[in-house]
Amino acid sequence: MRAFLAVSPDAPLRLELAQTQQRLKTIVEPLRLNSLKVTWAKPDTIHLTLKFFADLDERLAEPLHAAIAAAIKDVAPIAIPISRLGAFPRPQAPRVIWLGPPEDWELMADGRRLTALFQSIEDACAALGLPREAKPWHPHVTLARVKEGERAAGASLANAGVFDQPAVTASLVVDAVSLIRSDAGHDGHTHTVVWAATAVGALSRGDEPRQH
Image (tube, rainbow, N blue to C red; front, side, top):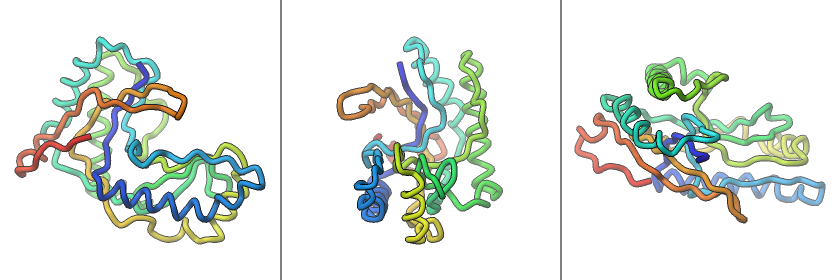
């Protein structure tokens, strides 16, 4: 199955993400007459991807659950300040528009903890024979994908100054990791939570397990 390990935003953050998307739409939508094509992520499917599986053997789902639960069991919640709007491969010609932490955040204490958590997840997956990521991983959530007209979109976003100011105020809290199945449909991909592993560090504070 096509699936991924992810962290899901809570409801208040999802609302802020949707509002951010709406602000961006007002900037780039007028460009549609100039052959701009943009696909916006549905707010209820926006997530932080930790690891993607193009074709995961369904028999590995439960062993993977046990491995990830063990990898995150002692992790205290990590709050990622996804306030920075960015783009791949570059803001001047965006193909992917995303939100992530400030550039130096990954060098700070919480950033280093997140990197260590990602490495633990990589190790757990590798122990099950799943390949490691070939490229460096940096936390971000995807808001939109630009199919055509990326230069025009980049110029409009830059002129509006959106790359130079904080986009959201809420943080994405990493206190659980889910395996989410992705099935293609007529209206895009449908996401289904296969399982969710909650960090013991989160439960020890008296929190209820998060719903995804």
